[in-house]
Image (spheres, rainbow, N blue to C red):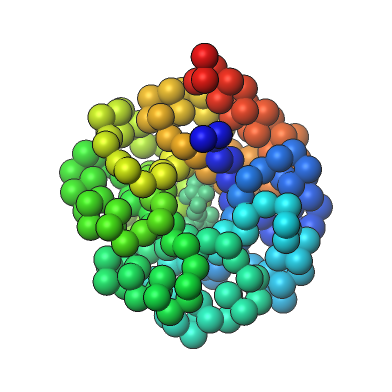
Length: 219
Ligand SMILES: O=C(O)c1ccccc1NCC(=O)[C@H](O)[C@H](O)COP(=O)(O)O
């Protein structure tokens, strides 16, 4: 199965087009008001139309209630829901049942102890995203440009598809894939010139580097 590349936190037509044209498999849209990448529903509707049929649309939420999820699903028409908060296993199951959409549950990683909850989430989610755990006091649980120790995942035996994120860049993505054997990579800060401002050249470079490392993996 080929490597999935996700560019997350897209918020303009221009940079969304760069990601799509450069071959991103997934494009992530953030619905979390403290984030510099937060999207209004009106913008989400427009970007969703632009991305339709060109990449999988990922709606990223943090402990959102049903009404919020309903509005996002109605407007963006996502292909995947990324749950980036403290959603319980039961809540993940509930969201899947209510919205009939695949769910990617984020596991925040700092040490191997953070993998303890994995079996339970793996029994309800469709995908897992391992992201760097946000430091105490952070204004958001992700999109902080911080890496975690990928060796924590070295001996992972997970039957579910999984991705890694957290401080990835064009310079380190190959190592992240080599160590974790992840089936997908996800980036936000590493393709920005400043928080929330996606940079076309950084997007292109990241996707190019991820694809190049995929070639190495096959060999
Ligand atoms: O990107 C955000 O602002 C954000 C806000 C709240 C929850 C999650 C958020 N991002 C989640 C992502 O999927 C990011 O791509 C992931 O955390 C990696 O971010 P980065 O380290 O900046 O590449």
